[in-house]
Image 1 (cartoon, rainbow, N blue to C red):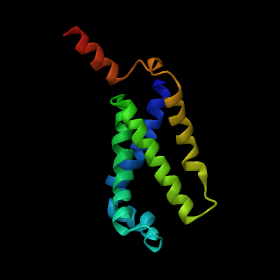
Image 2 (image 1 turned 60 degrees about the vertical axis):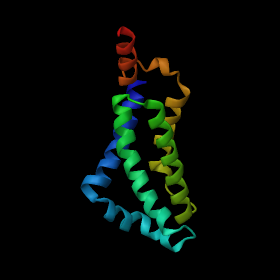
Image 3 (image 1 turned 180 degrees about the vertical axis):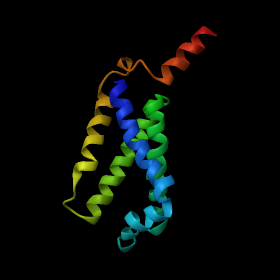
Length: 133
């Protein structure tokens, strides 16, 4: 569980890090989201989605790596994958799934495997620390 969670966290974190600190959100929008302006989606939703997906990938990835608020991070990242899948499908009906499927498999494993198997995480450390008080 530690390996799956940490690997998935690194994948998402590095993608979000790249969007925020290497490419920049404006350039991410221009490169990947601007194409949706010709669709039925309102511009405010497209812009919000660019920020949401970038932020959730960065923050959610970090939270998975740390093992902090794991279930919340997993749900936010699952929504991120749904949004990304919808967007790719809207642009191109038959699109390359190589970016989504590995993440979906790893995330599904985290949802399906018992959380008690994930012993090395900040959530457990905090829970055990508060029991001592």
